[in-house]
Length: 122
Image (cartoon, rainbow, N blue to C red; front, side, top):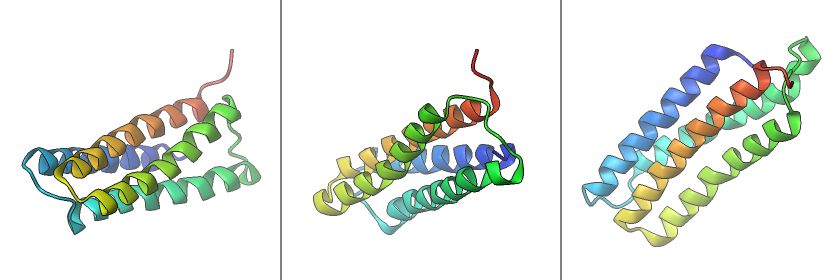
């Protein structure tokens, strides 16, 4: 995987997560800003999914456990959709906190996926 893209993706997810957590703890209901931040995280995950599928064809072979990698990737792709759906249905301040928590969980998953892609299995 491209390291700068992964680092940017982690940074976007952390910023989106902190933004949503702050808005949630301030008592704000889910807004276009918090849903848009999570949508940006989802867009970057979809780009990563395409890159992960295409990268081996261009010589960027993964060296870690690919089952673990794709499990993290599929979970990370599903999580923003579920959190966004919850926020649209519930529309409470806690929904915004859930959006933030989901974004921070995705940041951890993306960082772990980068480690799996770059670190050989022993």
